[in-house]
Image 1 (cartoon, rainbow, N blue to C red):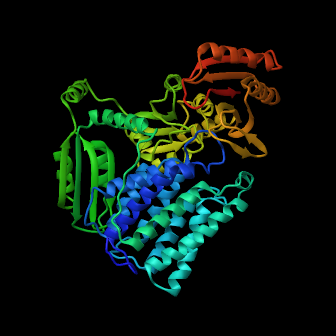
Image 2 (image 1 turned 135 degrees about the vertical axis):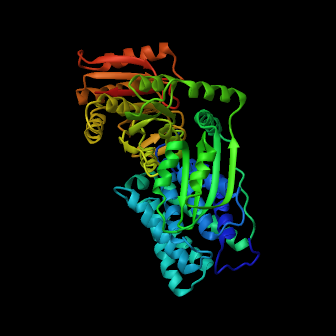
Image 3 (image 1 turned 180 degrees about the vertical axis):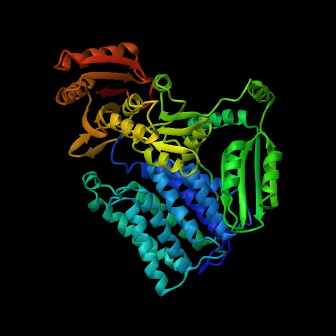
Length: 551
């Protein structure tokens, strides 16, 4: 980065440093942002998700030098989309996708261009949210962009415009307490809005100092999950063993490359293809790299080519066995991807017909790419995704933009809703009919969860102490207490009010079978209707001692 203190314009290398700086700042601030989450459950939510999302872009940019501004912006947006986790991660990836759109074909960005890019970022994010609410990251980003637009009219200077935008973001963040009743009761500002401010301030600080940014993510509790996801990625590579990457400069900028994209989808998986009108950038895992490279020459000439054999001796043996099998499997009509944690729950989803269960849930939201990789492994025309968590629905919706397959996201907000939705599936019905019936079935089940308070809190008039048992009823805090028996009685009261007839109890990894049976007995005694049927299952889920469904 240039050592000039004042920057009226930035280039690709500057933008790279700004993004890397933002990633590091989010990494350093993620626990502070997590603590702003209103629910005191141990969800490690907003800060972690935003940090991993922007961090994915930083890792990608550190692999590349001498990129133009538009190339850097596009690579940033693409990496964030693939690394996006949770609603906050998806929204920040959408903001940067819009920014990349605003910077397309640009080699420099001044104040006016930056204001326009921020505006397009906000439009992209708002366009992806069905019912945007005030007092969220969207509000903070919008106020930020509006202030930037006015500042650019006064002074066409990147650093000045960014500084004014930050001032507006700080005011907007402070106002989120009054705009959102839940935040007002908790006495905190919006966590996502805080994350966006951290991003903007880190970029501004790096711009002012002119220091080259570094990115050093901390080792955290999320590391085992990252390793598990990478292991699943390696399993995918067993089928397609050559990582093939290349850039082709197009003969004709107006030529349609959708046919080429379909061809690549038929030749392998893990496809990422970018066509910006001048170049085609491709990453694909395939068993026939020479055929892929030969097809690419129809569209232009190579600028770079890299082919790597990813198979070890063991994986080669597995691939040879798979390829020697008599005949290839025909494409089936329907496939299913479900997000869940816990060996027992994962097995139940598979018994109900789910092809691939992506590890994830409340404490570990999977990324878009995690779910996309699962979709790529299923040979089906139509694929239903069951997020089973309100914070994974938006992530799942983004996967449809990354795949040519017909993807439908059933908006399940809990594991029991996922189970219920699968019972609404009819193999003889068409896609739309199944989407409607599965979505409706998911709504018929009430979900109760028992976990613990990760910290002291005051929520909705309840004084919550760290270590208290917490009960949630359909995502809302029902009761906190130091006694599990009192929690069970409160849940039984809700079951009595609902007049449901079948109750399933899934006990977690921190609960013994004897403890679970005792809880089931107490729950049964507290339910008024003797005709209610109860069943106990070993879910082995983390975080939640019990997940209970009533239908």
